[in-house]
Image 1 (spheres, protein in one colour):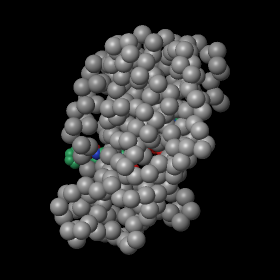
Image 2 (cartoon, helix red, strand yellow):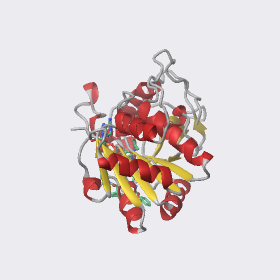
Image 3 (tube, rainbow, N blue to C red):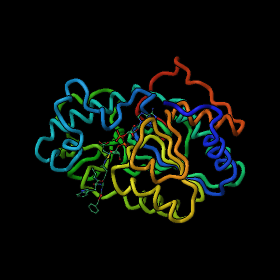
Length: 272
Ligand code: BV8
């Protein structure tokens, strides 16, 4: 059941957003759900229903069956390219701009690979788990941004003949060092940490809220459902990202326009 508009927890979160010197927001798949991107838990729909995402999102699965894995990722890539930012994404971009205009720090960490935060106008987004919109040659390491149409053969290969893989972090792979460093530095300095739409089960990101809290930051969770973070944070806001974030932005005097339905879906090469 979604939190009431006059709930004191919302007011406490809005007050923290208005006064914090250094803000860190961590988003998960729930932040993109209202854009039509399946969450990681329900990314297995239709023809993929018989697979487990955790089984496909590994280097072992790619080595074992590169055609199956690249078909799944290209299906997700095309789905994501047809999606656009939702009011939650837009609210985070507006809150970041407001903080910057007041000389306050605002770092957006995301586990999402869809680049919808960037499409909404957020800047300096730290992609902890990479992006599905870029693929790299496993032979040369060269990175490509495929055009907005499905690959025409699977597994796809680069001009050098190497297998192409998505530039995402698979289970068992290390996060990009520069992303992890940026996250650790931001968490070490923050006085407000907000987790949005993440199940809080995949590490190291799942440990960030506790890390921030241990350093004295106010910690907030925005999630439609209870998660392991719900018992860790100071303020738990039950509801969807697309409802709660615009409400918090409005409490800071920011109006979030509803996404224009005539906006064309994104093309590859959209702002990163
Ligand atoms: C690492 C990209 C170390 C790919 C993802 C053995 C070996 C190595 C590591 C491990 C190991 N055993 C365990 C580990 C650690 C492992 C881990 O944590 N495993 C878990 C399962 C226990 N972690 C790793 O492997 C990480 N690497 O540890 O490296 C290392 C060091 C040196 C050298 C080598 C190795 C790498 C993890 C990254 C995996 N890649 N994504 C892809 O996209 O395909 S993970 C993927 O799942 C997401 O990115 C996210 O991180 C994770 C969970 O997804 P969520 O975003 O949380 O989404 P989910 O669907 O789960 O939940 C959605 C939430 O939103 C729900 O709570 C729902 O209620 C809510 N919601 C829904 N709608 C809304 C909403 N909320 C608000 N509004 C809504 N509208």
